[in-house]
Length: 60
Image (tube, rainbow, N blue to C red; front, side, top):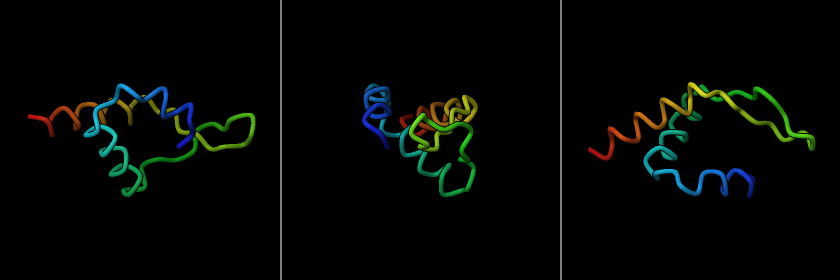
């Protein structure tokens, strides 16, 4: 993860970040765009919403 992504996600719950790992392991995370340096990025808002919901459920 880039420094920018870490800074942007500094307020994220560890549980939602863990769900992103699950999404990656399931093969659901694919490159949707690339940075100017060619770094692959996924900006799918749906994956983010699912991670937030599942992370919140894990905290209950």
